[in-house]
Amino acid sequence: MADLIKLTAAEIAAKIAAGELTAVEVTEAHLARIEAVDEKVHAFLHVDREGALAQARAIDEKRARGEKLGPLAGVPLALKDIFTTQDMPTTVGSKILEGWMAPYDATLTKKLKDADVVILGKTNMDEFAMGSSTENSAYGPTGNPWDLTKIPGGSGGGSSAALASFQAPLAIGTDTGGSIRQPAAVTGTVGVKPTYGGVSRYGMVAFSSSLDQGGPCARTVLDAALLHEAIAGHDPLDSTSIDAPVPPVVEAARNGSVDGMRVGVVKQFRGEGYQPGVLQRFDETVALLTELGAEVVELDCPSFDLALAAYYLIAPSECSSNLARFDAMRYGLRVGDDGTKSAEEVTALTREAGFGPEVKRRIMLGTYALSSGYYDAYYGSAQKVRTLITRDFERAFEQVDVIISPTTPTTAFPIGERTDDPMAMYLADVCTIPANLAGNAAMSLPCGLAPEDGLPVGLQIIAPAMADDRLYKVGAAVESALTEKWGHPLIEEAPAL
Image (cartoon, rainbow, N blue to C red; front, side, top):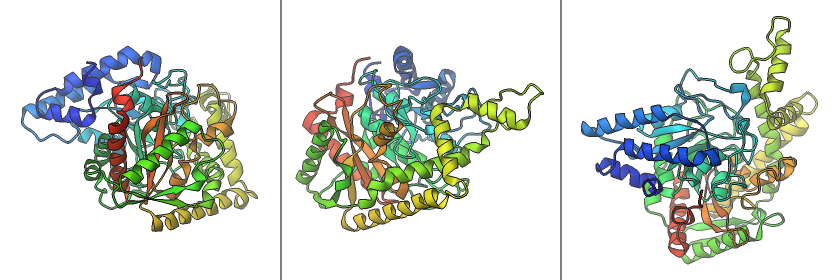
């Protein structure tokens, strides 16, 4: 089992297709791993043992009949508990949806099933995807497998921790302000935010509709590309879905190279608050890219300094609107309905009991920003800043093919360290937020361990909208060169659990 769970998704799929492994064997090995370690890690909120084994048996039967299998057939996956599933609860990490069974599968869920990917269960997350540490989950925090006293990132910490603890070779996350990339960075895994609209949001519980984007999480760049290809594509059920071919991400991952590429380094993505070890590993990676044939160009994007402030007006405003549907009348939790209270009182009592502190904080902030007399001063101004950030990106991409930066200013911080300081927590996303505001594609991949604490450091790559393949082209080249240099820290030196 120990060897099997350390295989990449591509290796597992190849062995199943060749008859060297069965999907059932692979699934059982990962279920056994979950049983062995997840009590410590708490990556999963729900494990669907019977459903996963039934999916695996069906895949083995297809292979026995000689039917063609997809590139990821039989590979297990951990699904963030924000996508609806008919056969498992969808809680979004919140008490207000505890035990809720959705009447339909999300488009992404359907695509995974159609690709014969085995869904092991649903992963822990910050409530309604609001957070950078997975400490805001109503069901308790997740630990970072590198050091269980540290955070695994957020909001998708359950998915990143499942990968880093070898409970699944693939996972799905969502990225509103960095919630795929930041967890990937602090757990030494790979996470990709596709171009906004590149992966369907139908059936994904909304936090901030103009920013939310589902995407792949994996332990290697190629595995992420294979999963990206499986989940991406136009969906008529999602009005923001892009009706265009999926960029050739798998081909790019198999042929990684930066020779002749122009790589931008933004001066706003370093300075006060950045951990020395993070900057050291980043600078080493910049030097490595030069060795590999890339031209490094320094960029000045002044509006990026305003991104954090703009995001924390736009995202709460949209969440204030989206979460109004949780009113105790239609679905989910209902508190105080004893026949003596009005609908308004029941709604208020339910929201008080069902929403956690961070969700309440953002709803209040967003409602205030949208209120009469403040709309133009706050929400309107934030949208103007968003336009400036988009223009800065456009100017930058006239000079370079991709932009790189540290994914996060620091490595994983201790659980509880920032819970009483929302601003310190929000600063974890200072490098990732601009790409969400502009709708660009972005990736985080490991670029080494910080010398001062031995924890993973993430390299962020940003590409223009619908140029997702550039992420994989650069990411694969960096991954290959760094693996040759110091070995893959996750696959070869996984932290003990």
